[in-house]
Amino acid sequence: TTADLAIAKTSGIGTVQPGGSVVYTITVTNNGPAEVTNATVTDNAPAGLTLGNWTCAVTNAGSGGIVTTACGAASGSGNLATTVTMKVGAVITYTAPATVAGGASGSIANTATVTAPAGIVDPAPANNSATDTDPVTPVADLAIVKDDGTTSVNAGASTVYTITVTNNGPS
Image 1: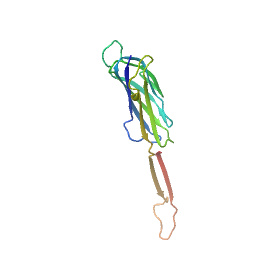
Image 2: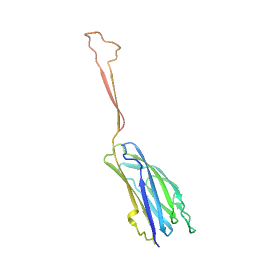
Image 3: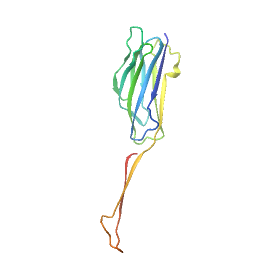
Image 4: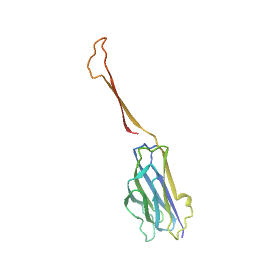
């Protein structure tokens, strides 16, 4: 039995911020020609990223057969590790919010994978994994206040200024 399972993943943004958040959209498709039961979908957060409460929805039920397209779990928390049952042409979409660690740097590369169940041959395994890579761009809201605590100073007199610099983050 043959079924071409495919997965796509995107955050829809170009960069992430340390201490910020991102929402990933993971789309799993069964291009056929056979239906599948218990295909595995995984997304393990890399270092610097924590997956939150994800959801799953059938966005196209597919056609034919007696199998109903279904998410193995409609929702969950943390790393994604679930199974799906898909008719030919079915599309299942996961929405997975994530938090970027405050000390993250470089790039965050997050990969999702779909694996055919035992007894199913996937003729195009190259489309069974998808990675979204976003550079980590620190953003800081810096503020400065300078004050001498008085409303006026006499000519020739001295005053002392207090200068306060604040980083309101998030980096």
